[in-house]
Length: 230
Image (tube, rainbow, N blue to C red):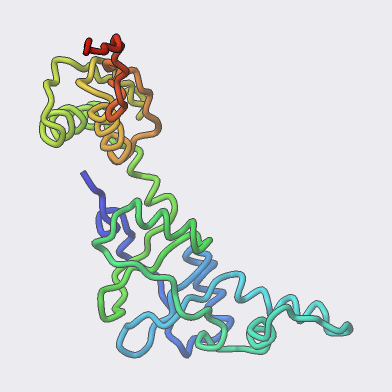
């Protein structure tokens, strides 16, 4: 099972047009209880995102009217003077496609240090928004569903081993697998596949296997030196 962004995203999205003014944006954010808005052009393509952080630049500037402000970036100085969404927004928007997995969305959020991703099609048309809490929703998956995937899709299907040799317990997303594997390689293959199952919190390994022979090592053979008589 691979939950996609399209499965968990919010489809009813509050967005701003590129010519929306500062006060309109603030009012929409407050009314909709959102902290950021995708900014759209006339064809409903996403061209950026305006967030609370973008808007705060103006308030910071207002508070420093009688002092010299040292802006860390020219973009912040520009935003402090801006009044329209096109000038306030951060561009380009961090976007993702609806067919990406929830795991990929989580990795992108972490790497880009954002709380949400704008979901678009290949042309940039707005489809939805996926947030951290949307992605974390995959952990609501039922324990029995996780166990069935491990037993039928991995142990039987993927690794083609006898499921009777293993016991799989899943509790609160924590998988404990025990049993006797044919070899260390088989055990490692099982564990690697299990770790990629969606919604697993942790994997506890209780698999045993026979010790391996040191392959490729030369064997020492004792012998008596024999010298034939002349």
